[in-house]
Amino acid sequence: MGRNDSLNLFGKKSYYPVELGDNRQKRNDRRKSKAEPSIPDGMWIKCNTCKAIIYKKEVTEYKLCPNCDAHFRMSPAERIRILCDEGSFQELDAGMEPKNPMDYPDYEAVIEKAQKKSGMKEGVVTGVCRIKQQPAVLAIMDSHFMMGSMGSVVGEKVTRAVEYATEHELPIIIFTTSGGARMQEGIISLMQMAKVSEALGRHDEAGLLYVTVLTDPTTGGVTASFAMLGDIILSEPKALIGFAGQRVIKGTIHQELPEGFQRAEFQLEHGFVDRIVHREKLRDELAAILRLHRRQ
Amino acid sequence: MSDAMKSVAIARMIERPNTKQFIRAIFDDFLEFHGDRLFADDGAVVGGIASLDGIPVTAIGIQKGHTLEENVNCNFGSPNPEGYRKALRLMKQAEKFHRPVVTFINTAGAFCGIGAEERGQGEAIARNLMEMSRLKTPIVSIFTGEGGSGGALALAVGDTVWMLEHGMYSVLSPEGFASILWRDSSRVAEAAELMKMTAKDLLENQVIDKIFAEPKEGLEKNLKFTTREIKKALLETIPELQKMELKELLEKRYQRFRKFGDFME
Image 1 (cartoon, rainbow over the protein chains, first blue to last red):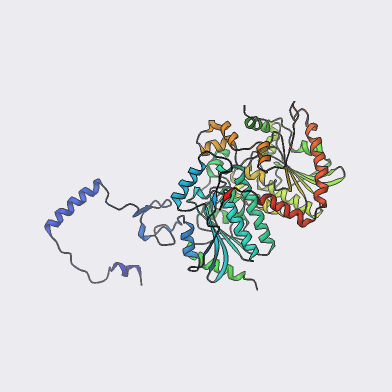
Image 2: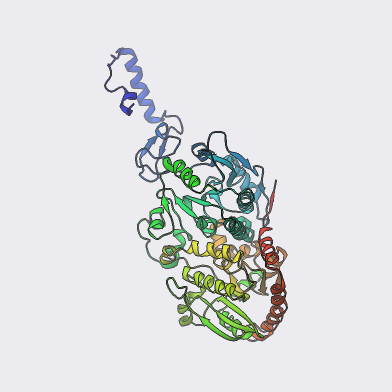
C-alpha cells in the first residue's frame, strides 16, 4: 500500500454539500482563528535542523523529521520501544536518586524540577533486554534530564550495568547523550569518569563486547570516558559529538568553526566512529552485531 | 581572601615550580623521551625514565612555562591528544619493564581547539582512564598546582593520589562554574569556596590521600622544602606498592575510584 492510498487521491470523489448559513459561520470562525490560533497545543512542531513546521502525527515512533530526516532526541522509554523485543526489558536500579555531595544550594529543587519535566528519576535508564532474541545489558542516557549530565547516579548506574554485564558474561550497549559532568556535584562527578572507565576495563579484559551508540549531543566528560571506549562505536546521523563545547573552543582560539565540526560525519571522517546508522536500521544492525559476537 | 581563592591564586602563579623542576629535584638521571609514535611530540606533557635512589621509575607530568616563550612551547600546560597518548605510551613502557609510574599534574585543562577535536581529545583522555585503571605496575599521582577536570584526571588514576598544600582539583575552573551555573563570572570566589577544590576539602572527600606542606616563603623560593618530603614519601610508598600482589594492587586501585558517588536507593 502506497502513501497515496490512504489519502484517497485517486478514489471516487464525494460531493460537498453547500449551505449558505454555515458558510457565514465558517467565515466568522476563520476571522476568529486569526486572532486566537485554534490549533491545539503541541499539534505542530518545528524541526531545528530544516526549520520546517511539521504536523506532529507525521512523526513516527522513530522520531525523524518527515521533511529532512533529522533524528530528534528521544527518551529512554521511546528508545526501548523501538529497540528491544517486546516486554523483554527489565530495569536495573530503577529507584536510585541523587543526594547533594557538595551541598550545592537548591540542588534538591533543581533535581525535583528536572524529575517533573522529564518524568525520570535521573539521567540514565539501565537494564537487561533482548534484541531479536539476543540478550544484552542496555544503558540509555536521557538528554531531557539536566542535559544528560553525569553525576553520582548516572555514574553508579552505568558502572553497575557494566559490572552486571561482566558478571553475567553479557554484551553491553550504551546510548550516550550528555552535556558532560554534572557541575553541581563538583569533583565527585569527575570521579565518575574514572569509575565507569575502570569497570569497562574489566568488562574488556573478560573478552566481552561493548557497543556505544552516540546520539545527539555527546560531549564533555562522557565523551572523555565511556562514549569513546566501545569495541564498536556507532553514531546516529548528524549527532554532535565532541570533547569541548563549541562556545568554549571559539572562546579559546578566536576563530569560526568549520561547517559540520564535531558532527557524526566529522567524527567518522577523523576515525572515531565505526558506522553512522540510521535510526530505522539500528535494531537490525545491533542484532547483527550481537549475533556475530555470540559466544560459542 | 578565602583559603580557596588563595590556593587558586598560588596554584596559578607563573613562578610556581613546574613538572621538570619537580622531576629534577626528586629523581636522578632523568632522561626525557619524546613523542606519541602516532602524530607528534606534545610539549605540554613531559616524560621519561629516572632513578629514585636507585629504583628505576617512569616520571610523567604536565609542563607549564615560566615565560611566554616557554609557555608557547608547552601550550600553557594544556595538552593535546598527542600529549595524553605520549603519557600512555610511556606508562605502557613502564608496565613492560615493571617500573613504577609517578605522574605530576598541573594543568588548567586539556586544550580546547579544532585540532584537538580532530585528533580525538575525548578518546585520548578516555583511553588513559581505562588503561591506567588496569596498568600492571604501581602509579603515584601528585597534583602540584592546578588540576583542571578531565585533562588532569587523565594522568591521575593512581594507586595513591597526593597534592601540595596549594594545589587544587575541580570539575571545571571556578570562573567557568560561576559563568555556567550563575551566568555571573564575578562570583568566582563564591564558586571556588562551594566547589571544595582545595587540598583540605579533597582530602576530606578522599579524592586525595595525602597533603604536602609548602614553605611559608613560597614554593618557588624553597622547592626542596616540599620535594624532600615527597621523595621520602615515594621511598616509603613505592616499595610497599611493589611488594603487593598484582591482583591486590589492581583491586585496590579499582576500589579507590569505585567508591565515589553520593546517592540513595
